[in-house]
Image 1 (cartoon, helix red, strand yellow):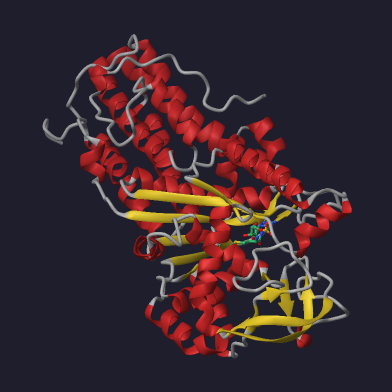
Image 2 (cartoon, helix red, strand yellow; image 1 turned 90 degrees about the horizontal axis):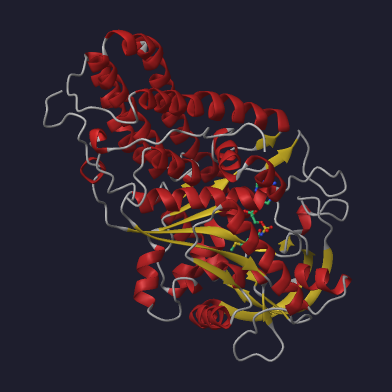
Length: 513
Ligand code: MSP
């Protein structure tokens, strides 16, 4: 490695500016119950994707919010009993609280009871009118799933999800979904990455190939919803209202061109059970309205708790607030995204969680940072300029400098788990490098070599912290603070470690709280 490209690497040069727009969305949450780990998971994943793209130089819009209409919410308020709007206000606040607790970097929090959303949902309806007709609906409805259920799918009075169904017979508006079958199939064919992970794609294609039926998009025996335009007695079906949130957040119905352009750069993070709404109904609505279809719908899996489906009656619902209070948000963010591949189902077990915290975080990462910074304290908190790098050091440099590019490739596919594994490869390599280089001996025998070794390790830790920033923003910030680069953004961070005054480190992951 020569002097000019020695350890003076400038993040902006390395990582390159990539000024594009990315929209990332979380589902909007039903407010009939308190936020739990499943909600936190969807939002944390979306947050990581958003933060990654922001750090990568894109202009990002991350939206989240609450889905407040529908029978389920109205009934929850009734059973208290409480005015439904007041109930919605209270419950929606709990999700805002969750967002603060999980360190969500949202740009917009949208409530479907807001005026801007009513205006947007109604404007969307108007654009769909050519595909809307009135008829009578009679069939089964699952209030818990807020979903119509085909007669052949009802078993013992329950929907496939296990939720009870009720018979409904009412006048209703219908959306001509059947007319979109071929266009949707053509779209999936031309955009093979629209549905992710790839394993979910066939599931959706088969569903569409089996034939799409027109479906009911209004209710008239019930009024907790967005009124259908020009109708006195119908409110919109909660899903058409809910899906519209994504364009409301972009400013719809104003500035339609911009909204359409942004939708084309949109990544929806959704749970697997609501993939069909996002990958079939939603694109059909957008096609009908002349708005671009999103770039990607990523369906994540479901968490169970200690091997069992979470349920209030079993008492095994994982409360994100409790875990965050006890172990810190970054530990939770790490566990959720590292324990399973993004897209697969997972088991939230206390043992597995503790194992990740103590092995991966405290031992691997925490000790790496601690060891290096403690050594630097032995040099009075300063490294001297030293460009005399051995081949081992150069190998680690190359790995460290390539990290962001590798992460970028993985994050293009929303492979959040792969990205964390990739960061941990560098953590392991750096720990191995310490063991091989034996800095404790160099401290006695060769201070010049010691400086080169520690400089290399600082470069590696810097790359690790930069890569970690979307996943564990607080931890990344702590590492940068130890390195005394407070006030500089990660992207601006220009490294000449001989200018840096290192502070004595505190443990990154204190074991007890
Ligand atoms: N309101 C609809 C979404 C409308 S989006 C236009 C809804 N809300 S929900 O509150 O029921 O679920 C929101 C998200 O939480 C879903 O993506 C769902 O997959 C996720 N999770 C709820 N429980 C979960 C787990 N146990 N594990 C992982 N995620 C799960 O559906």
